Image (tube, rainbow, N blue to C red; front, side, top):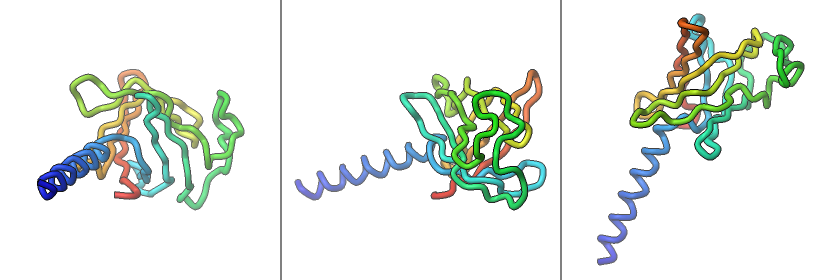
Length: 144
């Protein structure tokens, strides 16, 4: 009886860990789709169904230490700690989070965004939209 209970608990814990990996929540390394360069580590959290993401560490060697190009409340704020993901929630019946915005601190522009975990949650496809055009980056989970 105790063995069955232990086995059942192990299966529940393993399946909940797998489900947690199929979420944008976690620590990610963003990889520039044009250069292949890893630029930063971003921590995405799920706050009551809404995504939020902040830069925890800059990995790119050059660049500004503040968001000089930003035009909103983030103007002049330090890049480390900067909130670049605002909003976005899980779409009904799909493994995609959409409806939020993502900021590119290099140019200060904010884009509509979607986030799709792929490869068992080891990667995150981050797509930014500007009108009918989009650009996709594939981020790597920093702590798989």
